[in-house]
Image 1 (cartoon, rainbow, N blue to C red):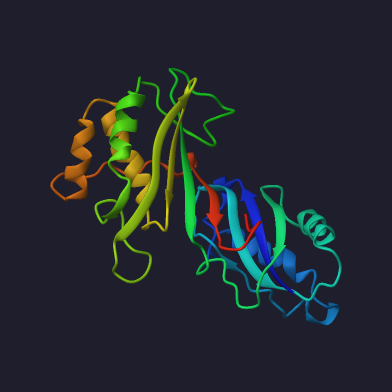
Image 2 (cartoon, helix red, strand yellow):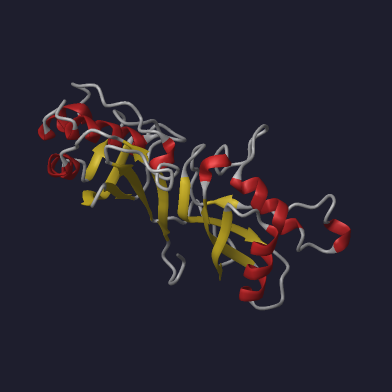
Amino acid sequence: MHLLAILEYDGTEFQGFQIQKNGRTVQAELERALVEFLPQAERKTGRVKTVGGGRTDAGVHAHGQTASFQLGWTRDLETLRRALNAKLPNDIFVRRLTQTPEKFSARYAALGRTYEYHVWNHPERSVFRTRFAHWIPEALDTMAMAQAARRLQGAHDFSAFGTPPQGNNPVRHVRRAEVARADSEIIFTFEANAFLYRMVRRMVGTLLLVGRGAMPPDEIIKVMQRKRRAGFSAPPQGLRLMKIQYAFENAT
């Protein structure tokens, strides 16, 4: 059976999604749990190889990460989902399992990805929020940041904000770039066909320059033209992979 898992996780204690030689990763924990569903004779030496839909960095969270894999399972998917969640650590949760075409890849079949970045914009930090948001105590101009964010929409060379994870094409199509405030929380939302490495966090870091009054909104065009330096990468805890889009219905 070829399956797609939709995952959420708290990335605080992970060195990212993808398996690494050193450090705890989401992919390694997922594959370790999936091995338990192999025949008894294969559990010590077998592996259920997964393909992630996105490569979140260390400390980055997810609400709609995806992973495709193949598993010999004959019962209903809800039973598998519950059993899998029982074997996963508390900071990973499988929200849904969907059957896919045979050669489906969570990474290469993706049509788009949506990220959110959360800022806790309040004079005092909150122990209940700053694990999942970047705390900035000084006032930020949300309207100016929203104005600048709109300049990021469209197909552009985004090499000012990141590097391609593979190949050398820095052009990405940003379909949505929004900044909105909900009380003391500011949410940056970006949707694109794909993203460069560190692109979202560098865009947020640059928009925060606008919010602090250190850069006019229109200057972000000069950043994209490499006529002005982008801001530093915003820290990872505010970033969340929200959704990965696919062509077939109910994929996410």
